[in-house]
Length: 115
Image 1 (cartoon, rainbow, N blue to C red):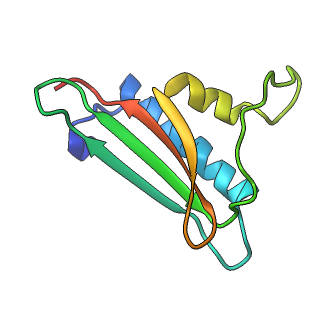
Image 2: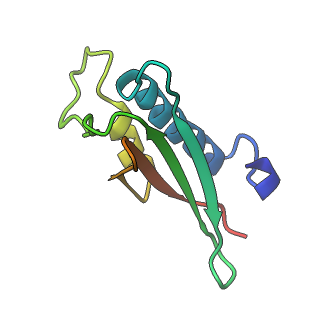
């Protein structure tokens, strides 16, 4: 992402790092099937005119029957249940789509730095 011009230590890069980490951790924790890995894809979409674009982060795994959902209110003392709350707070939008032949892809879109 630094090759795309994102400042190291900047708020946009830190937000993207957190979202990638949360989605990847969820794939490992909840989407793992023995003998199969998960797939991380990041795509930077620039607008036609000058300005900021969109970073689309996708994490695909093999467990299509285990759909993510954010906990309505994480337990204050709990160790789990905050990942998708964090993704919701940082991403402009996020969702999940089925992945053929089996599995799912959880995606999030974040604004990219201007310029």
